[in-house]
Image (cartoon, rainbow, N blue to C red):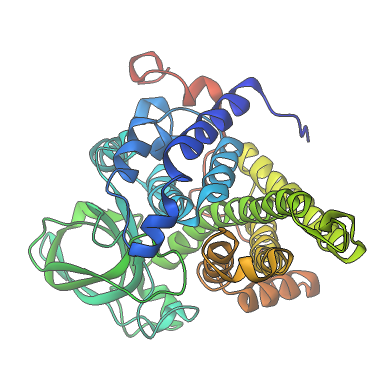
Length: 410
């Protein structure tokens, strides 16, 4: 494994750094206080090509690899978690699912406009009574001729009121056991009659982002909008989470770095007892731990990204990266607030926002407790990953960066 970054990696990283420092960091505190999403965020990310960063050029994307996706997510969350959340749902959970499981027709119809940023996408798995227990979902999809009739409500859906396309999971068979074998996946569009959405307010963190609910009442979805095969929804959802968790892990790594960099800066500027607090041993201890947490999280994410590039199943490695990075982003934020003292308790400095934002990631896309159980089961040999019918394709620059008409075999 080569840990050095290519010139393409560095260019993508710099592009996001320039964007966030000029257009996000100066105003994000204001949008966080408003508890509103800056209406310029999604169009600007689309204009920069961020929304299709790791999607092949032939499908409207930028043709970068999965390591680039991780680096972009790190830099976005260095600025604010809300931007990385966009990448998690639009790219990791939806677009990469279409890349992995979609038919060519589905890719042309839905993936291309998503990668170009012309359409925004969301992922609808969670319900009010079905989070970690996915099989307990109540949403249903009943076959009727050449259509499926969807009913149900999804909760805690990022970009619920912004997205044009939804990847919805519902039960096509409520009698089969185990229950997760009766779940199927569908591409639902906002303009389908019976689809309604709304925002959720009063969140602890990620306040400058869009989170809401998606309800479906007798929504008629064409059969060709099924992703994968009937009953394959659970496998698809879990593969989606492998990709989404990677973006969460890399983003949390960026949050750890934000806590570290801001704390170092403040410790140099703030003096007590006649010297900068950077010279106090207990402050040094906090900084040392944050550095250790960042380095470890970064390496875990790089391993997961490298495996993705090779087309190797990485459920275990991505789970470990997500678990470690998110847990330690909370710890880093707590330490950053402590370093800043009373100022860390106010919104005069961003560390209080880092703390509020950090808490969500230890809950969504697999709670820390779920990941602990997964890692224990891997260690004991109780859990083994079986090959999927369709794996996420390995990164191939000749394919990823080729225009449609120049790809052999078309």
